Image 1 (cartoon, each protein chain N blue to C red):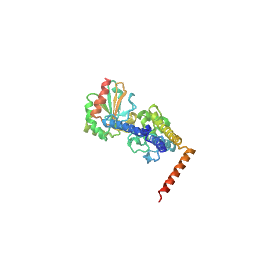
Image 2: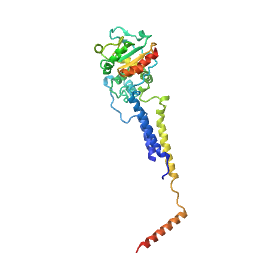
Image 3: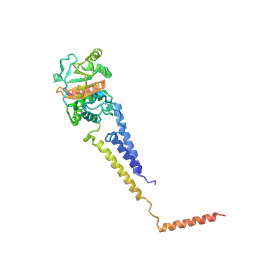
Image 4: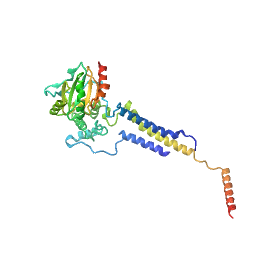
Length: 171
Length: 181
């Protein structure tokens, strides 16, 4: 029964992982080509960082940094063009959100309709803790109480009886 | 230990719940009412983006959507390299009898676009050239073909990603159009 609590914890971690609330363990190769990169390493770094947060709407489960799709390439170019114009990271993200919707962000923003998604992992965590604690408490409550003096005497009597029965059997 | 324990059934009930959710989603997908590839457009109810585009017929002139205000309008993103665009060509031809359609050639070469129109017909009142896909980005296009219905006021009323099928036209497009008139 403690195991079931652990399973629920695992499910919570899985849900968080699939919602990209925690970084993926395996990073796929990125699709960016040398000629796309910006000369300024600082801007390029920001571009890479932004690209990893943006969804490729063609493949849908890859970031535009990972995707080889044509649209991903266009979006990478757009992000870099806007960076060169001097836009802030937030301004670029909100510009793309205005065109493609919240879905373009790999991590969904915390809003009324995403509340369940964001709170579910915490809910699972609490549920797991509650079940684990409940199981442990019940286990300690139902632990056998030490045997009393009268019970001990009864056992001795039974043992004695058993022994005599066995000796009688022998020829 | 033969006592009836209701907690015993919790995993079973949770599992049945999951099966039900999956079943409903699958049923929606199979019946066509739910399509995971159809992303909702955030531009519904917003004015159509105003990205200046050169006309296919004449480089020097620009496509002006404003000129078509006061009537419902279809805007169709297409490309000669897109197979579903060929499939929906007859549907657009048919629709062009009841509504003006603007074509936007998405990431295409003008000579290829012209050849495509010769081969599959030209249902468009005007064709803009979106050579680098920048206009498509402003409209939230994520694949061709995509079709937008614009109200006489210039507001986007409806968007369909993918080819226009008979079903999409009758149950969605024509219904929206009737709503408008």
